Length: 221
Length: 241
Image (tube, rainbow over all chains, first blue to last red; front, side, top):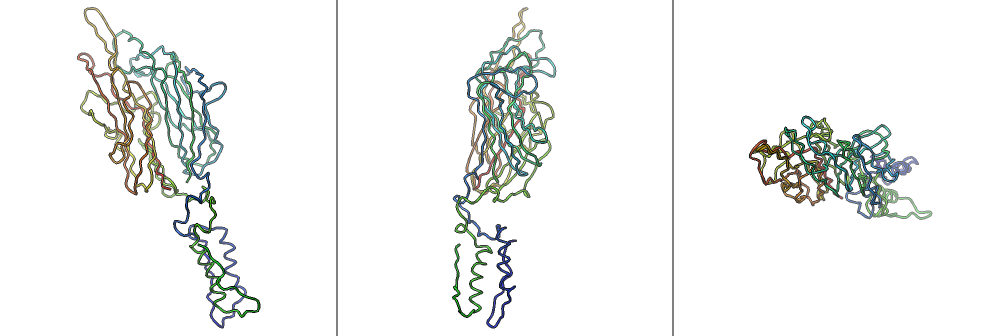
């Protein structure tokens, strides 16, 4: 507790020693370097006292080139257009229990859809799906921040028992996508980058990704 | 506050006790708890000066994960259920399937946390006066259904449900604060940002859905396209200063 306590209230006739006179100042020399909440009055700070960067800070990646890139990979792959991966370089070490918000959005263009009918069995409905992922890389490894899915067409139904193959539904063109999550930093590590990735269930379908953007918002205390 | 030398001491002046006591105590009183906005330069407070509140962090584990992290200027509250994580499967496998042919749904708002295994899927915390700024991100699907007709040697396969629509809403203390509008049939990850002022009070936030079914199959499987949820991520930031 950085308070000055070595004060003597001198009375008439006292002969103060050098140590008694110096003590409060010696204590001040130490305590003034560690001023804390005990030294300040309650409610002392106004918004004018805060440095401008005290607000939540954001980093952004934006691809607005109106150029589609196509993906039929069945494992996650970072979305890349013109050699530019959809990623934000973070390169900082948060405090434990810092919160970082991540948000991605974009546009799915004219995907090439060959398969949206249902398999019988465990994969019912799945050929119609594609998914996105936000992958965080730290100096200790990777963290899967979240996975979110969409369908190429409107179809979902199951229980197809006939040998008939239902006709292909029209692909949903110009479908915007967006998702967000909050990451809680729980172990000492340096955040290096976050990437936007995608995959499809069936490689007979090709996902078209148009403009997209990625945000990382570091929350202050 | 501001302070100054109470009794200036002049050359050759006799030193009286109050000269020493009053001068020193004036500064000590200031230093020992009366420093305020007059003593600190404007724009001098950085993020590092704000108190870290690591002692009151609550981590939530199990089939619903999340955290409650109150901080100096804001608090973060989050819960998630996801097939890829809490469900232990993958992004293509539904975590929850709601059979719309049964009596476990209504044509009004259906609470997600009324489903088995989802009972704890809502945010419940004591907010401080300020704003609630958050987002619900739900990966769900109510797709169209196949229709298979076989009659007189003619087999026909088609679809039904292109006019089905669904909607999601975010409720804060049972008040609808954000809604999506109707969404046509498809699998969709729906993001619902919301913000609302709040007092120093208990806050409960949950997400609910509406869907419509306009047609009905009289043969075969009554309703082959259930309302399915793959994941839901609900977070809110309580901004206080």
